[in-house]
Image 1 (tube, rainbow, N blue to C red):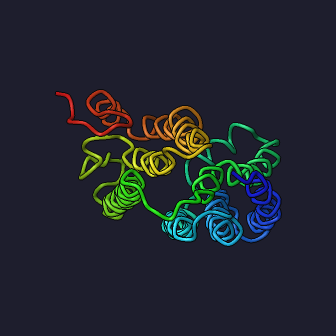
Image 2 (image 1 turned 135 degrees about the vertical axis):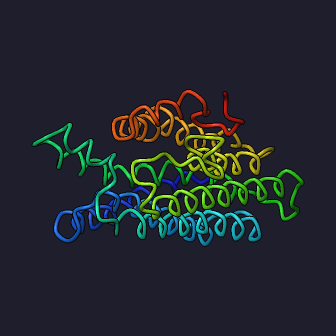
Image 3 (image 1 turned 120 degrees about the horizontal axis):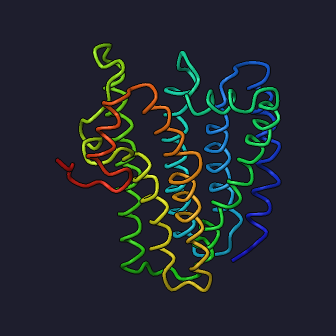
Length: 260
């Protein structure tokens, strides 16, 4: 793998995130802009890698299309449904209240940290785009299928939750429709599935193990840091016993049938 690619990803994405942070400070004070910035940076790096990596052209183009497709779908969703929302995402409001006067410094670090995230998550792409073989293996095609399930499942979960929230009669209620009947966070689950696709596609390559960075870092963050812990704390506080009952009967991450 060419290690210069993730380094360039960091160097080029950092000024992008500084500009996005300035937009957050001076134009639209919604920290979800950082997530849009990550998607923009990741998509641009994927496209750039396809031009500068040295592997087989077909592999470079397919992997770039997969990564940019994921980034565009997620970035547009966040921009439309989070950045343009009447209120900032509760996770960021919670953090702002927690850190008080120091909050803006933490948010600056968070915005710039998205450049580090782009560099880390670009490593699996760099591994796959270094593949010199023009023949596609069965597990690579399986990986493309897993990618489609991950991105499609996350989009379906997001859309189901949006439709539920748009109904005024559901204010203060918990969504248990569609995929949300089987997991409290199906969007996070399918996000993790998406990153596993690159692991499957990398089987047999010299630096295959580096593709594990994607699912390990992303799923770890969703389960333990910025995802489920903050979302569940806010949901339990705002929806009370109804959400706590949902917690008792429904898996947090992996979809499964509800418990009685």
